[in-house]
Length: 157
Image (tube, rainbow, N blue to C red; front, side):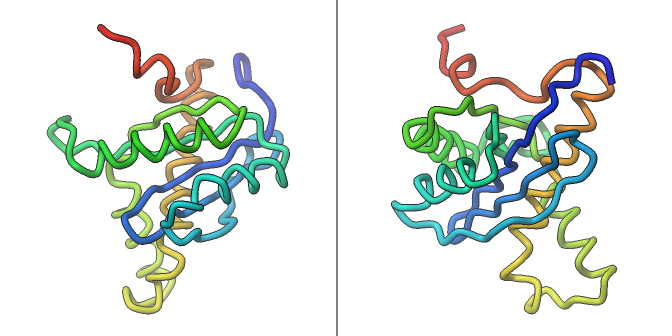
């Protein structure tokens, strides 16, 4: 586990109607669902409250990039949510490529016997679990945090 930073992290899957939130344990062994937050103006503050409640040290926001690597309207929306979250919390925010996390979440729910309709309320949490677990696994295997910090992504290139 060289290079892995121990501590609780939150994974955040930003959707237009809901925001899925997941957390991991201090040792990064397992990501679990926490809450689906309605996507309102109060959502960044609620996620910041959850971060405080779970004593998180970092927030990982999924960045939906198209399969060909291009940014989309959803990418811009996730960046805007991450900026609002940064303003609501003193914690560092990292943007993590989340290609296929929602697809993986739907597949996992289907495999567990849930219909798409019955999964609607929890799919965002499951997508947050998928992106968080992937980020933890990347850091453990490379020794480098997944994604890019929000402040780095805003610097001119």
